[in-house]
Length: 295
Image (cartoon, rainbow, N blue to C red; front, side, top):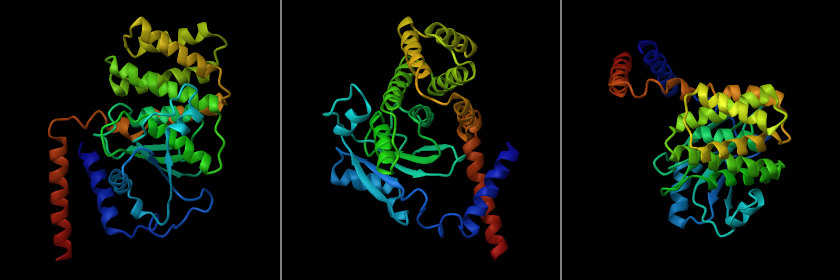
């Protein structure tokens, strides 16, 4: 704990005392273009302004702004409803190869079902890699429409996504939230999906029966109990994933990176009694020390 607090303090001190050469002076990324903000098409003017503030649009050197509607939904999801209301929004900043996916839900109280790991898992299934994605909503929503907005942002940026993969990715998000609603902890759901996909990547199963065996093994390993209906949903999803046109040799590494996110590493300590109080007091003492240096 003491080492963790020391690291946090060091990062905090550097962030407030050193010039921000890495961000302030970079300007527009000419390789990938502007960051793209995708607003839910059903936002009111005030709600859109609130989302823009949450996503720090004003803090960007420049940004491209678009909207996602129910019409876009049917382009990426086979059974999508063009009349669907779209509220959750996202800002997508593409990164260089190897950067991985960094997902931040900046309005966590308003994204009620989808977690950052669920987004990351679904995005990998859809074929999206190496980006920072921030998700926001001005009101409480499940968060599903943000994924469609991310798809649209990539195609606006010149990428071509496989519609079969985006459809399967949407199914994955639906299954993930249904499992969570069924009583499995959000973190366990993401761990389960990631581990099953890692095994698919490593074993390259040739049949549905082999996929079902992988699912059963991971359920037992993680000690997760599912209803027969939920087991069926999970096997159906993973069998669809098995049949996608994916380079599984590369996918395995990406999934390994996902399973080692910072959020997972600190997840075991954020609920420690007195942890956040210790952090607050530590920073207060640090600030007092820095003022003493200056004076």
